[in-house]
Image (cartoon, rainbow, N blue to C red):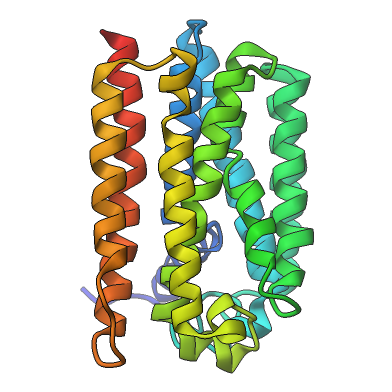
Length: 301
C-alpha cells in the first residue's frame, strides 16, 4: 500500500511539530534549568516548615518556567554572539531554526506568567524573588558580558537565587539560613565560571565576551580562584559557627573544601592548562551537591 500526498504532508507536519518542541525545550537550556531547579528544591527542603505536595508542584512548575524564561531571554539577546562560538552555533536561534521574535515572545510570556504563578499560588515574596532573578540575569548580566569581565560577579547574584526562591516559596519570608544558602551558591559560581572561561577561552574571545582570564591572564585568574575557594571554604562553615549544622555537615564541608583547594593549587603549565581547567570544572559540579546533601541528611536525621 502506498502513502498518499496527504499522508506525506501529515508526516512532515508531525516532524516539524516535534522539531519545534525540541527547539523550545533547547531554548530553556534544560540542563541548566534542571540544575537550578534542584537548588530551588534544596532551599524548599531545608526550610523548617513542611508544605503540602500541591505546593511543591506550584513551586517546581513555576520555578521551571521562570528559569527557562530567563534562559530563553538570554538566548534571544545573545543569538548573534552564539553564532560566533563553536559550542553554541547550533542552538535554535543562531542556526536559524527559530525566529528571534518567537523566542522573545516565549521568554516574556513564560517569565511574566511564572512570576504571577509563584506570587498567586505561593506568596508575593517568592514572586518578587523570581522577578529580580529573571530581570537581573537577562537584562543586567547578559548585556554586560561583552562590556566588562566583572559581569561574572553580577551574574552570580541571580545564579544564587535558586535556594532563596525555594525557601521563600515555603516560608514567605527571608531567614538567616536562606541567606547562607545564597552566599554559598554565590561564591561557588566564581571558580566554576573561571573554569568554564578557561575551557572556552578561544570561543569567548571570538565572540567578544569579556572574561577575567582575557583581562588579567591565566595565572592571575588562577590566584583569584584560590582566593575564592578559601572564601568558599569559610562561608561553608558559617552554619557550624551559628550552630545550625552538626558533625556530618562539618566533616563534608571541610573535607570537600580542602580537596577542592588541593586540586586548584596544583601547578599548571601551558600544556596541561585545559586538563586542569576541566578537572576543576568537574570538581565544582560535585562540590555543591555534597554540601546540600549533607544539610538535607542532617535535617532528616
